[in-house]
Amino acid sequence: MEKVVVFAGGTGSVKLVRGLVAQHHDVHVVSNVGDNYWLYGMYICPDIDTVVYGLADLLDYERGWGIKKDTFNFLRQMEVFGEETWFRIGDRDAATHLMRTNMLKNGKNLTDITRWMCEKFAVATKITPLTDNIVETRITTNKGEMHLQEFWVKYRGRDKVEGIQYVGADKARPSPEAVNAIQDASMVVLAPGNPLTSIGPMLQIKGVRKELSKVKKKVVAVSPLIGGKAISGPAGDYMEAAGIETSVFGLAKMYSDVCSNLVIDTKDKSQSKKIRNLDMSVYETKILMKNKTAEEALASFILKQVRV
Image (cartoon, rainbow, N blue to C red; front, side):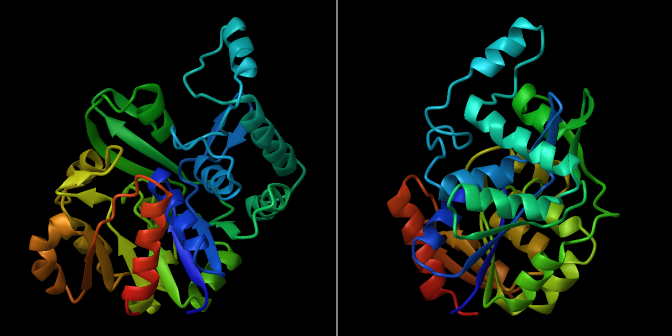
């Protein structure tokens, strides 16, 4: 097996990416940008940064985001100025956002900036944003529409989800680097991120579903659900709001046009037959990644057991 491309977004994705990189020499991460958010005049890219920090061994493993042992003096000062501080930006993390913002203002695109970031953090793995265009995942709730970060971080996902929009996705185009990665891949892995807010925004960008459908036999999705419940986060709420069955079968139907292989937890094996009826191969194993040993075990299973 040669190039493994991973569509990544969210905290579950970085775990699998880390496991794959530990065992395979040629991994290319294509990152979600729908979570990106402007705050304090800085452009924040949570999904990109989480993978960069994770591979640089800087990630705060307990929280799943940010830099470990970071300080928060900047945020405390913002509080003194009367600013809202619900988005927990550490001091070292803020430097990343500030550099990115300055580079954007000086005409660099997000692909070039991410490549530069990888060099600065000594990350050899290629990490590419799926698009250089602006795409925002917005959640419609019983209290109105808001950015995903506001819904999940500011309001802690308490409001009832009524719908999801991917603003800008219809006008966005995948970067040439991302398209080439899909075309050159021996395997494309849809990481176990939230199917509607981590992987979903990527599939909504014009041309992406078409490119994946061309290499459908090589595409492997890893379930973010066990026993009909999300491993973490509000995936179940989003699926329900979108009218999608909250189960691995519902997930399989959602991905069926772009994916021929699904890795599910052994607890969900009762649904394997229904999934196979969708002309999709099913692989059962333990998918919960509680530590690095589990990350590498799942990655090894995918690399050695899934036939593409």
